[in-house]
Image 1 (cartoon, helix red, strand yellow):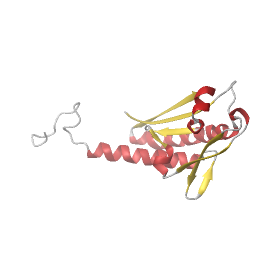
Image 2 (cartoon, rainbow, N blue to C red):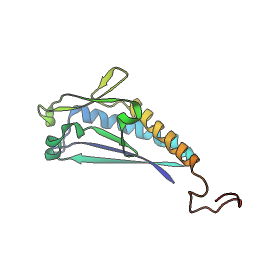
Image 3 (cartoon, rainbow, N blue to C red):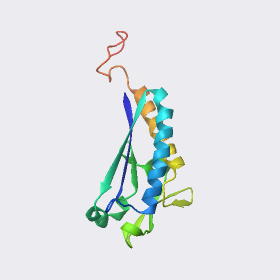
Length: 149
């Protein structure tokens, strides 16, 4: 079964994260649930992973926090978004944290609608790539007729 992989990373310190990452987490839960039920009839499985960034990792690269990857590509790739930054709070301290701008709108928390849109675009690419493979590319299947391969 082919897999749609969604990975999310954020700073966690003392079992706490900032409000924008907390909001993104809630939106991810909704998006993952909707995507799972949408892609299951297509024979696809959704795998969701969370990664904790250490304080050291965060300080070295604060824009890596609240970052979502779909099939190893950042969310902004799928939705033609631009990465920005704005001052955060709480566990992030005075650091500038990641924002995403799409169609002139800037988001600190990533809305579930954007996650779903990016996920469906990734699924569309997966299906197109699968359809473009010939029977010769799939070593597990045998040619249907002698003109193949």
